[in-house]
Length: 62
Image (cartoon, rainbow, N blue to C red; front, side, top):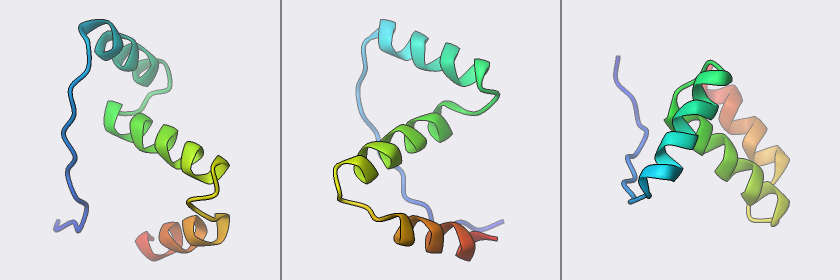
């Protein structure tokens, strides 16, 4: 199945990586999905992303 998602690579300490993996496991999701959710919430709170834009993006994926 083709996807139009981009990849972003970044560096993190072993401690941060381990904590992200633990949190993702507790939430039963991938580390990638966890990070995207955290970033989305932050961008919404800072006004860089609107709820309407997020909703439209979610609806086009289904």
